[in-house]
Length: 567
Image (cartoon, rainbow, N blue to C red):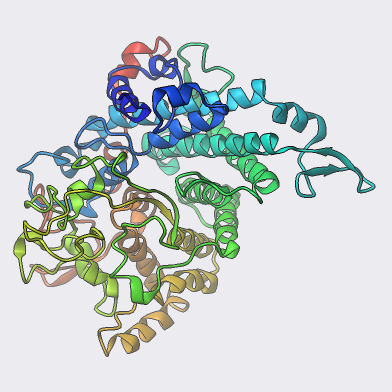
């Protein structure tokens, strides 16, 4: 029986060959519903939002399977993830740092493909719901779902349907903010590179913008960067306000549905990447305002106390395979109906499942990065030291593994169901954002406080000397700026390894350079180099200031199709 999920797979494959206007004018698609069920839905907003979410994990090929494949592109491009064997060919171009040319078409179609459903939800809310009319007439509720006058009298009460419409509207705004902030991260050079190239935020044309107002008007010209920034700010702050007013009684069906804390997290990360890209001191208002906002929104998520840092005792036992983990803010519950099989993060990374990694094409941590992890840090044990089996050297066999088979690589034990859940956002990200923001706002004590909230839970309890070594390390973070920034960079790269944050960490923070010990010269070098375990260009220096390599180009499918994009 044809399902919406299957339609999405066909849809995603088709749009990769077309310009964004062409697939933005396709009909809206629902989530994992039978077609007849979607047609009969009383709430089309729900169906359309399910379609948006299902594109987060839609499969179009063995190496294009939604957000988790995009996470891998970035981590491979910046070299924190190493493809150790190119014999199978998958992700070879990312290992060779050709993501910019090879992946731009998929990234473009993936993100613009989501916009059709997102804009359809927003349009439906504004044209077909009583919520929108009443919101414009009475404003936001301030007492439960009641709107009060100055004397405290109820002048309007939003009903349950209004409340649901509000929630789907907030979810759609959140996802649109997520899409456009993602496009900025991938398709826009860092701001200091823009300035060096003679651009500023008001005269840099980045990519077309489609909203509910113009989605049926045909191909759009490139928008200026400040227009995109304005839209992201408006969408996410509006979503937070609506969630705050209407979401107190709402319980989402799963963590796949974004909520107020995910909206705050997306906004905090957007501000962090926007702010630090301006390579100036904290006294500069262009830096300070976004950085303070990054801190504010990240800390709001932390202070909500709805999610917990993975505790020390569980660091090696979670397998990052269960959406119910308390550290997960946003993710996908993978089921038999939604698994991508081999076309999944697990199908490429988990050596305990039937995967390319299991048969030798491992995705491993970069050797230099692994060597930088202190001996006291339990996260070093996330990665196989290769002593028992060199085939799996430095693969993340204790970070990512199947709950059905957490340890074995024997053929008879291997997991062939690929049901590990997908993580999109964890609470640890908020602590790292807050720590970095405090550092660049020249508050080293607070920066160390946020960072050590994570590292306090990362001591190797199996090592009797680890606690003393960590105490010395910890004490240095609030007194030595050089040690702190080194620790901050390392924690971004190790804590979130394989979760899609490596490329932006690289773009934001490599102005500080990653120091590493050169085994050949027996010296410490201030260069960014690939480790010896990469299949391609091992040991090569990475030109971190070559922005053209790390910024995606608008694909030919768009430049050829969109009449506004001339030669």
